[in-house]
Image (cartoon, rainbow, N blue to C red; front, side, top):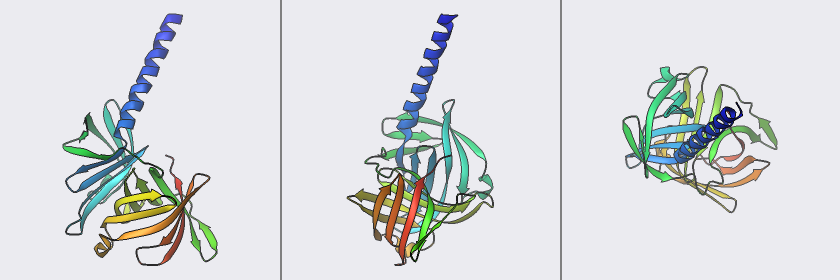
Amino acid sequence: MKQIITAFFLFYLLSVSVYSQNKNKLLGAWKNQESIITIVDGFYSYAEFDKASKTFAGTSGGQWEIENKQIVQLVEFNTFSPEKVGTTLKKNFSLNGKNLVLGDKTFTRIDNNKPGALAGAWLITGRKRGEEIGEIKEGPRKTMKILSGTRFQWIAYNTATKQFMGTGGGTYTSEKGKYIENIDFFSRDNTRVGASLDFKFELKDGDWHHSGKSSKGDPIYEIWRLRKK
């Protein structure tokens, strides 16, 4: 009996190890022509756009996990098919060097979540108005920002109504307290494509304090918190 329990425990540890290895290998940003999928721990975003013509085709994303050699996606936003919000999708995947085959598409790795000071999925939890910081409680209406090591995408949406309010994304750097976004796509205003925005950032007790000027030139001070499922 003791041998059976030991064997089962070793099998469990091996299964957890294999799961963790496969999961970690997926983290980062991947590209297929002008589409980008950004995968962080527990969450993902996908966007189609053409930077040269400043056109935005659409986006989708939500939560993910690995189950029986498939990626299981819980859709939280989808501009291509809004009716899929709230549904679970399963896709076969395989990794071959720097390539990720996901469903019928092949993506090439852009980064592996490095350097990664801000890698993860963040929800906005506070915004300064005047001298007061107003709390933004988590609910179906979300403003989320997903960052790999070099890519970012923010998304505003509502899981209850399946409404999509906007998104933007591109590349970023975060060094010595300065956070710089280089915009590759913007669903609300394509004239902002190609622009770079400079911000100050600081991590305080795990929260991301973000200040500077918005794409419209208005002063902002925001607080973001790493999201949990």
